[in-house]
Amino acid sequence: MNGGMLRCWNLVNQLSKYTELDVLTLQSDIQEKISSHEVINSSTNFLFPAKKSLIPEKSFVTKVLDGFIYRWFYRTFSSTDSNFLRIIPIVKNIENNKYDLIIFEHLESLMLWRKIKKIFPTAVIVFDAHNVDHVLLSGKLTKTQLNRIRAQESSLFLKCDLIIACSINDANVFAQLNQYKIPVRVVPNGIDTKMNSYNFPDFSENLNLIFCGSLDYDPNIQGLCWFLENIWPAIVERHPSINLSIVGRGKISIVLKNLLQKNSRIIFIGEVDNVVQYYRKAHFAIVPILHGSGTRMKILEAMSLGIPVISTTAGAEGLEYEADKNILIANSPCEFNRAIKFFDKPQVLKCISENARELVERKYSWDIIVSNLMKELIELK
Image (cartoon, rainbow, N blue to C red; front, side, top):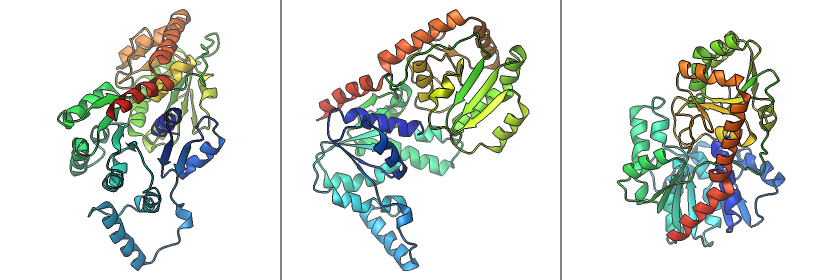
């Protein structure tokens, strides 16, 4: 699972302890995780559209008819999205249900808003913003596309009763975009502290850094390339036996592939089912993110497991950290060189590691986060 999926999964997991849930998702590949997971409450009902593979190839006439149905159902003249077309039967099947609260994840899901609001007019509508998309996608989309996204993010107050954001910075942006006409609350990303046990690394072994993150996510790719070009050679020069393990899903770009081939002491692992075993072999987790929004679950994951973290300020955005107390912050090659000197101070690093674990337990445990969220939701009723 990527960070967004983990956020959704843990919100569902924790909310299921307080109330009955229906979860409508297009991600049918999550069914295996659901069937093997013992935490999700039995009162939670997952709703999936028919798999694409079960839908026969459509004729031209059928496609045109589907286009009319789509535009009528969603009250839009935009191009047809076949994924959301598959949701129509599910929405019709739940029309007789009664919901106190409906949470939309991502802007795309709001295509359902008009129909959902008509069927369930008294339900409280919450929008969970994983990022500020027009900021995150700046430089990747055209100006027209970014303006369209910004317009959507600026009109959330017309559709929703509450916006929840991952960081205070994101929350401030959403509040300003919506002219302060809707409450915006911070619901940070979290971590399962019970599942992730603390274990400080053994610094008598050869040093190993770890980068963990989706390799099809632009901020991760750009940050990792910057690190490999500007910082990694100096680290290897100072510590010739050090290794860097790269763990993450997604096809690597040509630029990153060339850098991996050019730089020594790098172990490319790729996608794994369980990243914990790789953290257990690491002495540091690096988060060289240069831009983006939201919060990095990878930082919380490393902190909970006892691995000291070196991050840029952008990488640690949204976390209530204290530099040199529970995390090392480095925004330039010079500052990374300063952080490298901590490699020879395991006792100092152990103190940073313990403080990081305490921070995670106090502020970023999912049970605490969702407990606070429930208080906000109850006030909205």
